[in-house]
Length: 227
Image (cartoon, rainbow, N blue to C red; front, side):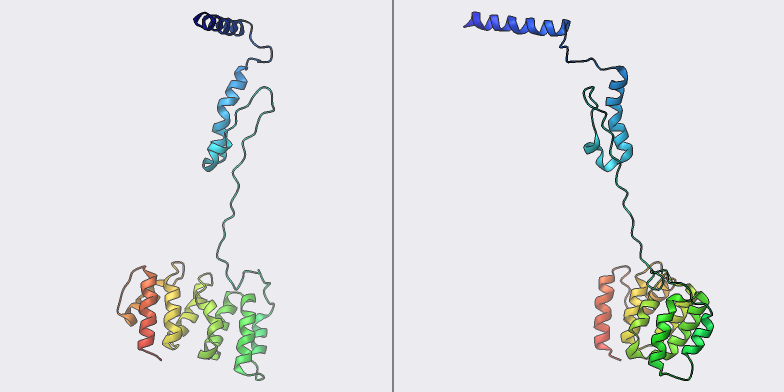
């Protein structure tokens, strides 16, 4: 057995020496450029996407076309759209005449309010501010829900928001406090700080940015202090 093992070892060594000297005709030595490409592919992949480097690292072999590093997908970021301009509605020409027509002697206040709310997204800032004043006077407490979309919309012009927020202060607590809490939670809203201060006066608590506690306290306060 020892003799057989020795013979086998000699045969293996001889084969290895032959491969080192002559080489396999199918094993084509890599060029310097190919070696460089092999090293640089992972670097290109890192530039394409740090998050997918390990998956996008490819080794270029001489027997197949170079593998191109995949580009990282571009993720579109979503933004909060202004519900009054999300559809890019065209502005109404002669909008002041249109407002006057709606406010004419015919029709009840509820119908006029509905038409003004529908017209609002198609108005320039000056027109929206004017309509905000009219809506504050026309919309009854029980019909206030559509205006809540305006008062909490931080994308509206500040002058328009001022009109709506001032109107909120004159509404019943059941309307006022939930809206003020919504405003306070939006750092982009120009009246966020003021809304939070008013809530603190009503609830006699300051929970910082713990909005869960704010909501719980407000709900309990409204139960204990119905309008």
